[in-house]
Structures are given as C-alpha cells and as structure tokens.
Length: 215
Image 1 (tube, rainbow, N blue to C red):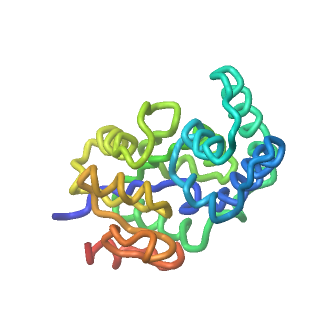
Image 2: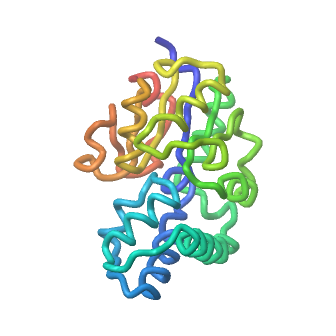
C-alpha cells in the first residue's frame, strides 16, 4: 500500500520544545514542593497538559480543587510560552525541513497530530505552517494519547485511511496511539522505549523517502 500521508508529532519531532516543557513543569513542581526530575518528565511526553499535571500531583500528598488545578495549568503554560518566545527556524530539528520539502515534492500529504494547544503558534514561529495540509492539536481533541483520536482526526482531515499514513513520534504514548489507530509508525528516540514502532531512529536526521518506501 502506497503511503499517502505523514502525520508528525510536534514536540521532539519537529522542534525540541520538550526541554521548555520540562523547565516549566519543574518550576511548578518546585513551588508545590513535589520532587520532579527528567526521568519523571518522560511520563509526560505526548500526553495532555491536564494529564501531565495530574501525574505530577500524584507524586505529592496534597489534594487540590479543580479551580486550583486550572490555575496551575495556566501558570505552567504561561511559563512555557515565555521559553518558547525565544525559538525560531534555527531550532527546527535536524533533517525535518529537508524531509518536508521531499514530501511536498512527491505530493505526500503532511499532517500534525499534537496534544499541544500551542502547536499553531510554534509552527508559525518556525515558518513551517504552510507545509501542513492538516493541523490537529489539543484544541481539536478530547482524548489524550495513547488514545489515537488525534491521529485519526488528522487522517480524516487529510482524507486518508490509517494504513495509508505514517505517524512520526518521539513518545511512548504517541507510538502506542499510532498502533491503536492502525497507522504505520516511526519512532524518534530510544528503541527500548519506542519498541512498538515499525522502525526507530535515534535522530530526525535519518528521516527520508527511502524510509517511507520500506514501510
């Protein structure tokens, strides 16, 4: 079956904003006196802001109201956006721009499937928005990864079937969502963590049309 579309995650695949998420969550956790490190941060990759907050709060002992949680999530996002204000096209991960050019040249559709509610803002800052035929972010979905909703909706907007599309992910939850949705998947990162992906690369620099043809 010919691959008709590629659906990208954002954080850790197109741009390394994961470091900004970690700094913002770390700042909030420190204020709440909850221990939080980079190992803990792995659990937050690919999941929604609300779910990420719940994971962090479970490490503490204090209970919070829904209103308090909303304020915490808002504060974290404001901190994250302050960090993101510094990014530009120079922060695009290795090989991504070239790969997007290849996909467009071969008329392979390009979609985004991200839990981030700031996805469009980030793509605009990177000058990449015009590459995307469909952008599905946290503002368009109700279920977080590993639920496949975000990728299924992206496929729907691209007018392709799941088995005609490849999902590119750096998070375990994202790869699991791709598998549940019936997509081919390419993992970026640790092959032990992303073992369910069809193929795993250590860097986005290895992404190219040859990889897609193998799938």
